[in-house]
Amino acid sequence: MDTTTIILAITAGVVGLTLVAIAVAIVLLARHNRAFSRELRRLVDNNVALLETAASQQADAARGMMEQLRQEAAVATMPVLVLLDEPPIGIRDQPWAAVRVRNVGNGSALNFVVWMRVAGHLYHSAGAEARGFSQDLHLAVGDTFEPGPFQNMLYVGDAHGYLDPGAAVVGDDPSANLMAYCGDPVGNRFRYNLRTGDPADFWERGADAPSWAGAWDPRLSSGGVLQREAQTVWASVPERDMRRLVEALADVLDALQDSTVDQHVGLTGRANRRPRVTEPGSDTGTGL
Image 1: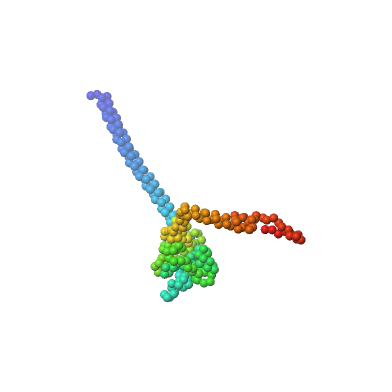
Image 2: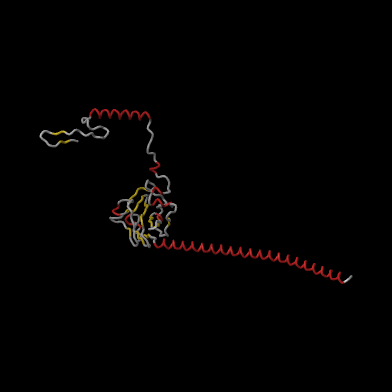
């Protein structure tokens, strides 16, 4: 084997090894690129998840802050109604002895009303001069409602009657037979159990009416159909009786027309102007 052949063989071997090395390098670089891409994708996904978590936490924090501000605003304008004292057992069921109520909250108690149910009878607080429960009554901060000449408890009727707003408004049980209701300046409404002193039930402005909405209007009560509304008001009249009624009315009308002296006044209820009659010696005339 001559020198040229040896050189060519060595050169071919070197080229082959170089190509193998290049191929191995390309494979390793491709694997590295794939691993780098996966790691980069993982980092991006983690960053996106962190951003979403941070945004969610910020949104929750903002909602919590808004709720806290709303609650603080509600407390700042919220009335709180309390029963000042409990009369002795012997007179506790008397309307004049059971409803001394004070507003000890931070805001005015608007459209204030008290419902009381005692021994099957309903009572409702009234406003100025006891004009009835359509009269608005408001308690400012520190004001007291106590029956007297200008505000009183009015008898409404029997329980389960026409004006009964329902058991959700005022119950038969002694622990729930004296309930106070009011609103605040922003339109929220509250229910207070004056017997137990529990925290007020809250009816937020714009929310669906609760079962005790009938405290202001019995028609809003969820207690079902009222008795008077359930009764039949009109009944059908038999055709034979209707014909006899029409004939009797026609006879009465004919008799009235025959006996009418003044022909200038008809039975329709409209009067015709009579001609002016001037008396002798008078400058003025009189007429109907």
